[in-house]
Image (cartoon, rainbow, N blue to C red; front, side, top):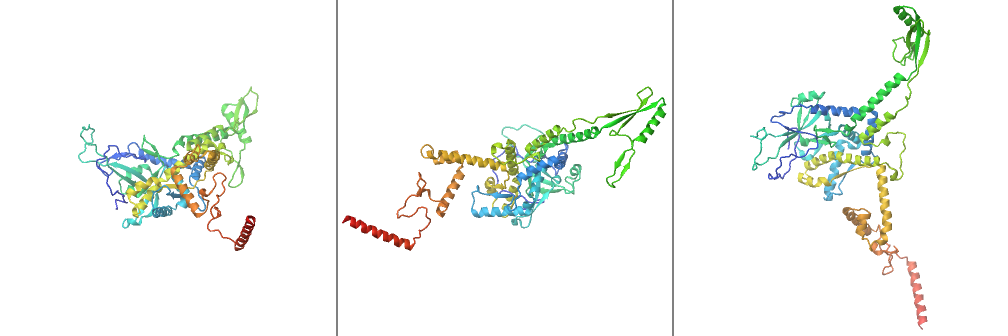
Length: 557
């Protein structure tokens, strides 16, 4: 099973050779198909694709350090990953899987084992944040090559800057690289690809990565040895995987420039500066300048506070924009004069800053109402909830579903290696295995509760007409919005609870009054099991019955 540095999982049943297609499978990882005859052959970074990818990841990480961007990222991660004191952030959901109870138990055990290898319960926030910021996450699946049936031994995180996925088309013997028209009777061959990863442990710069590809420092790893989960956002023009932060690059740069320019403007325009007009009379230019400097040094004392030592000292330096102006005035003027320049006006306006902050949050998919830290949290009716919050809840749900692909790949490898299932079985089971994340979105819960309340109120209104104008099945499907699977599961649960005596049997209840129907033998239909009769009460009842019979005989006589 060993192949290169890793392993490969192959199907036991080969596909039919009669199924042909000149178009390869769609790839969601943004990797282009490289045509090459050698080991690395013609894989040359002419357009700078890998260099750009390297720079993109570095840029995403720098963006995550910005306070506004970090706050938005934390809102997304905190909604997606809920850390609870007792429950795990995610569990495997197998209710839709048509399998035996034993198999479901084994799947749950193996999924729990995978989470332990990743230490997911403790590092879930960090793992999801790295995936969200970088737009991809890589894990090396470590196995015992001599004993692969023991399953995964370790899951090791790989920095996305150090690994690259390659899809390389195999060159067919006798193929002509030149373009030619095919005849009608020519068969169109299926394209075949070699898919693998290139891992370079020491990458300092993207150019070094390019130079080291195929060298001593690079390692070729089989595709099945790596678990890769991308963001799902792909730039098809440049075949590059993007992060969810990509849309916010321009908005963040604009916010930074506006903030910097605002700081510079306020520092330069805030203070009030004075203009000293010094009368120099008829002095020559050189002596006038000397006289002006003497007056400046006599009256201009710049006191500076030293924060390190706590001293206040006289610091005489060159004049800057923040200081006063000293201008000479010739004879015939108004003499020495001092005027004051006013400081900048409207320095407290922050409308432009707030605009770009909202623009940044919109680009990141986070509701603008979350910018204001002093804003309260409304737990009222769902009609008071902004539409942005509902959109945000759906966005987080899509992120969770995409992130769960990582667990899918790990679970597939673990189950197949331990011979619990076959690759063919996995294809049938994959769509029915779901992952249940702890939900902590109060807005979505409010919406769901109000919908349920409305359905129950409608049910109470329509109940007198059930059996006349509406059937029970129609009400359950159209009013309560229950699916066929939910109806089947609920019916089984109700029957089980009736047998256990948790709820009364509807057949023993009066449909009009809702009271229990009388039974033969005088038994109470609501009583569960055999009724225990007190002996004293039984004797009293027999005496009353005997007295009644005596009175009846006397009346007959």
